[in-house]
Image (cartoon, rainbow, N blue to C red; front, side, top):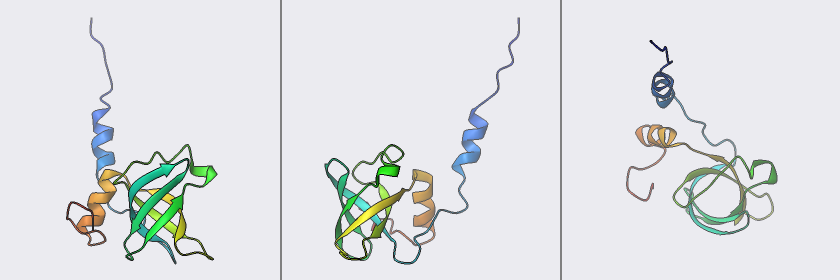
Length: 111
C-alpha cells in the first residue's frame, strides 16, 4: 500500500527566503526589547539612542508575542517621546535581511 503525502518542507524553505522586510515610516523607529514590565508594558532600546517605555496596543495583544531581544518597530507618542507603541515584530529571517542591508549592526546586541 502506498501513501502520497505532500511535503510541507518545500513551502517552509520558500518562506525562509526574504527579499525585503518592512521598514519604519515617518517617525517610527527600530528597537530591541530589553525587558517586559508586566501587562502590556515593555522597555525598548531604540536605534535613535533612547530607551522607551512602550506598550502593545489592544488590537495587537494576541498577535504579537514578545520576549526580550526581539526586534520591533516602535511608534513614539506625539506628546511624550519617552513612550511609544510597539506596532510590528520582525521574524528571524527578516532580522537577517536587516543586518545584511545595514539597518542593524551584526553585533550580539543587535546594534
